[in-house]
Length: 265
Image (tube, rainbow, N blue to C red):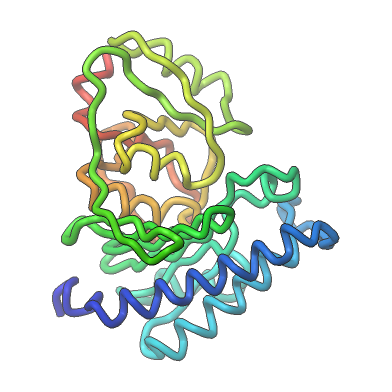
C-alpha cells in the first residue's frame, strides 16, 4: 500500500479534528492554571494536560484506524510495539511540558505516522494559537489557521546570514561549539518544543542543530512537516533519522532547508 493510500484526505481531515480537540483540552487546563504536575520515572514532568491530550488522541486514532497501533509518550507499555510493527502512530500529546508549566506558550501536540522506520506524515497542533501544521515527504505541507483557512508552507533559505534556531532549555556547550563552526555568519533564534522544525518549514529559520537527547516522539510529526515543506532531518553522518529503533532516544541530528555541506566546514 502506498503512503498516499494510507494517508488519504478523509484520514487527514479526521486526524486534524482530533488535534483540534486535543488543542482545546490542553488550553482549557493551561488557562485554568490550577493543574497538578507529577514526575515520571525519568524525572520528566507530566501534567493533566499531557494525559488529557493523550486520552483524546489515542481514543480518536483507535476509532479511526483500529488496525494501526498507537505508541504514546504517556503509555510506557506501548513502547515495545514500535519494533514489532511496520506501521504505527507515534504521538507526543504535549511536547514542551516544561514550557507549559512555566507559562510559556511554546508547546505543541504531535502525531506522526511511521512506516518501515521512516515518518511518512505528521500533524502538529499549536494549542495557544489553535493552529495545525500537517504534511509529509510524499505530499506537501500545510498550515490550518483557527478560522479554517489553509495555506501551503514551504522552506525559504536566507541568502546571507544563517538563521539558526535552537532550544530555549537545551542550548548546551556542544550545540554552541557546532554553531560557532559554521561557514556563514548567523543569527540565533530560540523556541521551544517542535516549533523549531515548523519555523524552518515556514521559511522563518534555516537550521536547527540538536546535540542534546530527544526521543522519537519529540521529532516524528514535525520531521514529516518539514520534509513536506522541502527540508530534511539528518543525523550528523548524513543518514536519515529513523524511527522504531530498539533505543527510543534519537541520535544527534540537524534539521535544515539546505545541504549540510553548504554550511558545515
